[in-house]
Length: 302
Image 1 (cartoon, rainbow, N blue to C red):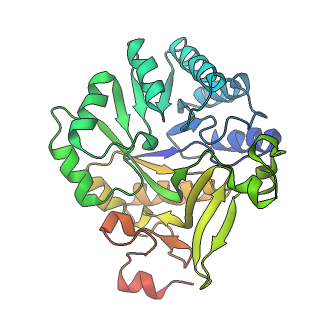
Image 2 (tube, rainbow, N blue to C red):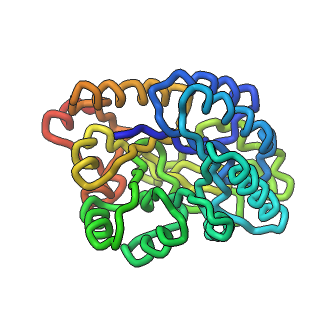
């Protein structure tokens, strides 16, 4: 199985981004996704900056894909999307992760293979077959997919396609035209002053009962708990998953990658002990906020 590092969901200063990906070059990660997927106003990193990072990662032997915006609302965002696709098409070493059907259309129209991201919301074999025929070489199912649903989709495909699964990190649940982070600071979206930079891991929210509920990241709503399916990597493999995706939470995510790589190499079941901040219910067809773990694993929660 391969390990991938999904696109950075948070707004980090440019210096922090560059330093992080310099460490990624030496990490045990096979596939790396670069680019902004949440908010087009986050402009500290431009396309040229991402391509410079991509060049260094390619030199380190990594597979690199440019991820596209998941919610496109303006012509300026379409222009940026076209530039990303053009850059990837000009370099056969690069791929595009399409997180919007406009990106899938542009890549298909150019006759270039692409990766279908989780934001395309592909829930059945018929939809996946359409995307595969359009040129998708790999796909990431929606984050709330269960093992049962995934196996059903893959069993009914006319031809195989590589499957990648979001297995670690705060789940991207929804996107809005409104910016929750700006609103929390009493600012309108159009004059947000880039306040999400103050929250490099998002803003945790709790229910009235004090239970971890959501994590707010600009216009994106994430799960309050960190999704953790790594200890079930054998189940993922048996279900047809070829690539395990980690979402960058902080520079410490690279330690998670190291633990996963070691577990895969040594055939170890335990990758990372479960904690109260973890969840993985969707995979087991139970509420997503819950944690499906074995008796011994549950007793080790802290």
